[in-house]
Image (tube, rainbow, N blue to C red; front, side, top):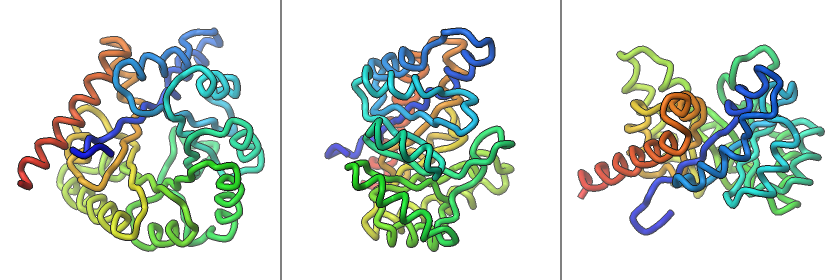
Length: 252
């Protein structure tokens, strides 16, 4: 983070690939979208190579890694297949996520406490290839502490509960994320966040001072269908920075 704590934006291009796969065409190209995101101010690009290959394909991962000058956050399930791909691609960061075939998108965080032995093997295998490891978890102290115990450098807090809850539960869900971020930061883990964030609900998340990077995809791609990809990324980054600066000004 810079000295004025500018929050970072990781743009997830999965749903550019979703549009392409809907017709089985060669367009739109997630690599081109990632490069436009770079020009619009994105700090990183996120891709989730799912086991069922429903959107991002293997060639997308290699193409983006080789042609786009942005750090890659490679989301992956903890499987041998994905581990081998990650070790070849050598992204800047791997985020291990839970994955179920029937889900529309990732539902909830990893249970690190329950799966600490198996996850430990994966974390070690990635770190041996000089890849930073992130775990996608719910904002629960036990899960955060277990992540620290595994030796990961980063966690990504699941913001889906906040994004999807009823209005009367919003502040409670936001408080969970605030407390989780503060706890993780206090024990020396970089804290990112993502899932379900859009142009309205991102403001309060971006104001949480411990959060380093927000990974956002679907809402940016949806807006891009109306306004273009550059504008969609640029506007999201602008909103995030303004929210962070407003929060810091209020604290001073």
